[in-house]
Length: 353
Ligand code: MRU
Image (cartoon, rainbow, N blue to C red; front, side):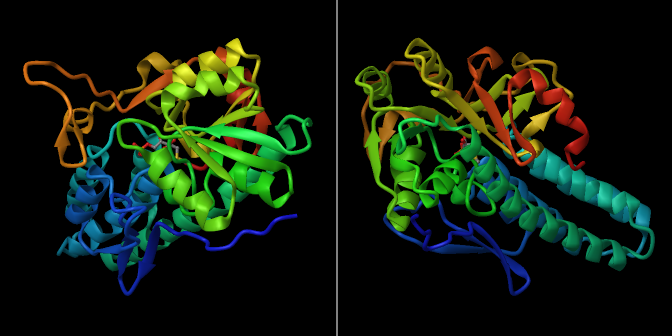
């Protein structure tokens, strides 16, 4: 058995404000940014100081409470109208990860359902934001435990490949895909993690590698184009990734490059798991073609650090996510269990709304 050290919490409520680990500065610097205004929270989400589907849901929930605090009226209707504007601002920050709009909608529902004064509504909103934060931590631990049950039984110690960062940094703590990695590690079932570097933002090389190194989990960073070779060499026993939005049929949007990884895994007969909380499932979408894909600024492609690496006069396309068809997914690992994508609708009632 191994143990875990150095728990990481990317979104901490502290002294009436939120402390965010500045994920744009890792692994070089481990610093916190203090946020106390809703507009600053929206900016922190847009600029990816905080990123990862569940983490931006938690951050947006606190952003909603901050927005509520900023509204200076005792009139309930006026308050709710102004709060809708805060919701709109936060929802517009990042379009693909549904956890963000799920959290904002949950806060809005609390606002509409709380009877009493505006001050009482604000108190309930804070409580809901705190619940979203603490529930996500428990959810990730359950995902980790459920993932352990479906990982291949052989070899005894597994090599798992992951993409992007679906770790403690991307959630309230512990992680989804890295939650499965963590539980395999503590159970003594993990030999090594292969972390795709994940161009263009390098969440794998910078964040997943950092999290694993913090805890002494053996990690090998590879560039995205090396994954197929590693599978062919027999280095990889299973792939585990997170998700930003899963449609009702099990099609799953995750960081760009996930789809090609799933295709390559299928070609090598390697199981491909998607680990995500039920809050990542968007039952209103019948399939993945309806998932909005965020496009980010081309600077993420043409510049490495401060150096421009491409010639002038060329065009760029920078989708941040892609959709892996359900047919390529061995199982979806959630807090309520691990099951095949077709079984997803049976879990709809278990989703907190
Ligand atoms: O653009 P990012 O860094 O927010 O993208 C993150 C991912 O794609 C993660 O894999 C996903 O959000 C799952 S996080 C538990």
